[in-house]
Every structure is written in C-alpha cells, then in structure tokens.
Length: 240
Image (tube, rainbow, N blue to C red; front, side):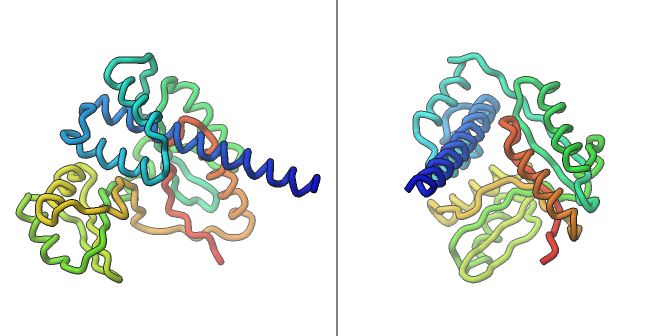
C-alpha cells in the first residue's frame, strides 16, 4: 500500500495545486473585470460571462464574492494587465497575458521561462500582428441565419460564423464581445454558451518537431505555473 498511497497523495497534491491556480486566475480576472465595468453582472456582460465560466469550472462562490468585494473597494490588491510576446522553440510565436501587482517581477519571471526553454522575448507587437484578437461565442443550434441576422441588426462586425455538428460558433473582433453576446441573447433567449471567450487566434501555424517539442512543453509548463499568468496563446502545431 505504501507506494500506491504515496502516488495517490502526490496526485491529490497536484490536483489541489491545479485547483488553487484556477481559483486564483478567476479571482484576479473577475476583480479586474468588475473594477473596469462595475460589479453588477446584469450591467457588465463581460463579468457575467466570466462568472458563468468560473461556476462551470467549479470555482467556489466565496472566491467570486471575495473578488467582487475587492473590486468594490474592500481589500487592498490592485492588479493591472500585462502582455508579453516572444518566439518559442522552432520559432513558434507566443503571447502571454498576465494580471500583476508587480510588473517588474512578472517581466523577470516570464523572461526566465523563455530563457530556460532556449526561447526569447520580443518587443510589444512583434508577434501579435500574426494573430486575430477574437471574441468567440459557441452554442447549440442549427439556424445560423437567425444568429447572423440578429448580429447584423445589432450592427456587430461579424468576422465569421460556423455551423457544424449542431453547434453555431460566432467570431467577432474582441471589441465587439459584449455587443455580440447581448444581440444573441436578445434574439434567441437565454443561451448556454459552450464557448464564451476572448482569444488570440493564430493566422498561421508553425510545426514543432524533434527536440523542440520537449522545450516547447517546458515553456508552456513553466509559464502556466506562474501565478501572474492568465493565458498563453501560441501558433505551434506539435508534429505527430
């Protein structure tokens, strides 16, 4: 039993650490979103979507409430967004989105992750021009014409709309997120969005092969282990 128990204990510790990371990530993101657009989810659609995603990821209500309380002025931390761009193994392109209360520390930590993976940070804008910054909304449905009509009537600048396997996916510029979501809700009723996110979508992909695969995985692992990192986007395609 000894070794099996030890394996189980280590697995439980990893799971606990992963949950803590998820809770911390959502707590910071909800705090910043509420600070910028207000703490009422009915009047702040971005916050509403974020809270819905947090609940789907089983984030406890007290974590959400604590973040909202801080945004209302109860509590001390003040986080600001920071974005870093760089080139990973195999010359793939990487964008790292952070929320930090200490930009100097975060920059040093992110740079160290790139250095350990034999990669290099670039200047702002060095890779982001090769990504589309998109709002992505996906939900169960088959009438893409009704969805598109609702979006056009609301004057939403739709980038693309897909209808595959009973799921409609809408792509729009990230600045149109709230308007697009509200237009769909107004026209189609209360929708349960399977995807409700703002992402950087690469325009092209770079294939990672050989020794670069392990380095690339190391880069992602070390970045995701940083408390300040919220999201990592890349254009890498790992060779099979």
